Image 1 (cartoon, rainbow, N blue to C red):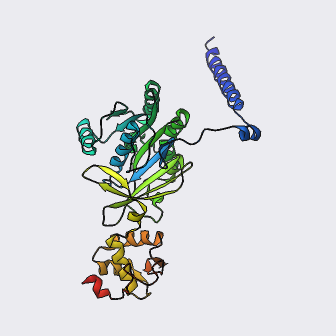
Image 2: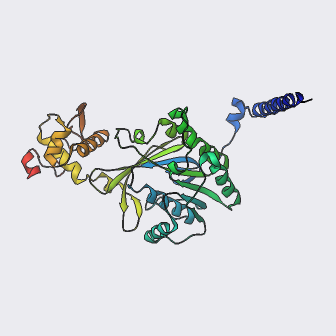
Length: 350
C-alpha cells in the first residue's frame, strides 16, 4: 500500500498536465478569425507616451525621473495634462514609492502645487517580485473602482536577487515579464522606474542599465537623457504600440514639473552647442577630436565627447571618423546662426 502513494501522485500530476495541454490547445486561433477580430484601439494614459502595458522609464540618478513619474501619476489621477499640454486619461493610480517616505512624498506633492486626489494611492513598501509583488498588485487592481496605472519606483527595490546559475538576459527578462503579463491581462499601464548606466552610447536605449532582456520584456521604453551643461533633457521613447519619441524637455525645479518644449524652443540651440559649432567652423573643415574641442570651449573631455556624439546623432555636425568631428554644412550652410561668417577661434575663447 505504501508504494501506491507515489503512483497516485504521479497519475494526478499527469492528469493535471493533460488538462493544461487541452486548455492551451483550446486557445489556438487561425488566420481567418484573427482577420475578423475587431480590437479596441490602443488606450493611452498619457497621450503618445504611456499606453496600456509595461513601460520602463530609465534615467541617470538625480536626473528627475521620479519627479516625472510623480507628474504622470498626478496627471492621470486627476485627468489633468502633463508635460504642460499632453492629455491624460483619468483613473485610479497606485504609486509604489520605494525610495521615499510619506514626509518626502508630502513635500513633493506640495511643491508641485498638486490638488490632493483620492484617486492617487501611495505605498512606501512592497513585496519582492518572487515573493508576491505581482499578486499584491493584482489584488489592488481587483479592489479599485477604475484602476488604470501602477508606478513602481524603482525596479531594483522589487526585483528578485539573481541566483548564481541565472543568465543575465534571462534574469532581466524575468524581472519585467510578470508585470508585463499583469498589465496586458488587466488592461492597465505599469510604469517601472529604472536607472541608466554610467557609460554613454549613441543610441539612448543602449544606456538602460542591464541587458536587453529588460528592454525586450517591456512594451515600451522611455529614456530621460540630460543635455550637456544646461537645464534641458530629451525624452526618448520606443515601443510596440507607441510611435518613436524624441521630445525636448525642461525641468522646473521650483514647481517640480517637467514640461515638453514646443517646436521653436526645441529648435533653439543651447549656448554649449553653439560654442561647439563655432569651434568646428573655425577649423575650416578639419576634423577635431573631443579633446581639442574641450580645450577650445573650456570643458573636460568626457562632457565634450558626450555632447559631440549627441550633436552628430541629430545632424548638427558630422562624425568624420571614430572620435573626430567636423562642421557639416546643414540648413545654415557655412554661416553661423546669425548669418555672418564665423571663422575666428579667438572670438570664441576670448
